[in-house]
Image 1 (cartoon, rainbow, N blue to C red):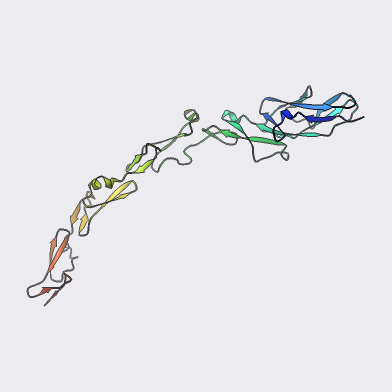
Image 2 (image 1 turned 90 degrees about the horizontal axis):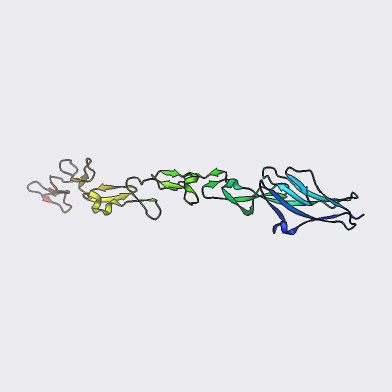
Length: 268
């Protein structure tokens, strides 16, 4: 008595000899058997895994990615002879929770030395996770500019749009870019020094006024520059007499003395 033979129908396998099955629906794999003696042949499933049964020399499998298995098949003829065991490589396409689609790339985790694998999901823009089970927090990556409030859109609000967040108003000292919706610093100094009497220095989100030598910034408005009276404040370098001028001072000498070339000291 010659044992029967068993093989899988190539049309049911992908280029990697995997049986690609969809989760939670019945999938059919046609099995080819032959017995040279003309004996009746029956299919057997090893270890009777959950969700698998034989129907008309085909394997019916309701896939469940949470229950990995190793599917082994063999043929048995009416005289009790067995074919060699054939193990089926299975690749499961999950539903991605209805929030994505399967790719052609399997996940890094393999079961039973690669005999049971699961395809990666490509999630719709509003979802994330291995099975697209989580709504994406689009604000987690801090896409808005500093000082802008970020509002994460719900999946229903986002739909299939690639952007899942809204940025709030720009803080003082910034304008919104029409191209990117981000905020950019306003250079207040380009607007006639923005009220600074002397010097204007732009800063991030603001500006600062400063004064030329001989002047001090008015602390009440921080824009006006007031003359410093170096003579009254005794900061002048004059050896004899001091006369305040706008933004500076002049030195002079007592009668009988001459002002030296340095402009400060006196000599006979």
